[in-house]
Length: 125
Image (tube, rainbow, N blue to C red; front, side, top):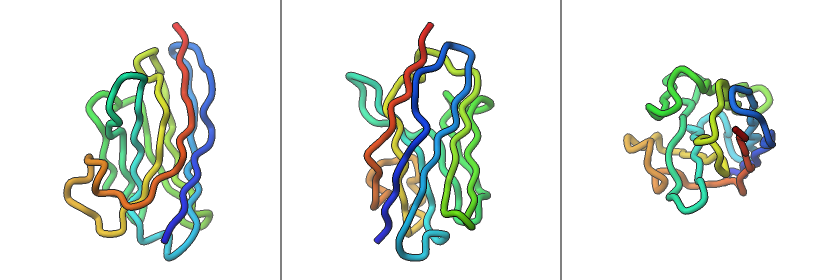
């Protein structure tokens, strides 16, 4: 069992940056793949990025490549999502989630067993 808690959301102007944090606690946290998803009003929740167990093997949605960076500090059980060049289309509730099995369908919600409550990111134009 793993618990994950997101933080770092807020309001930022277009072109600005935010860094989200996902702190995990519980059983062998370093063995989990950690993914970031987001859900904008009226939309389904969608994949943003994933960090592999050791912090490598990073994956990104096409819409955020080159702007967002996922990183991991296993010493503090924290996964970060650095978001640069934000635009209003990035406005959403951002969630982190943990996957023990390393499912090959890493962009799909059902591959992740444990979810946080989300943190709101609002980008103003």
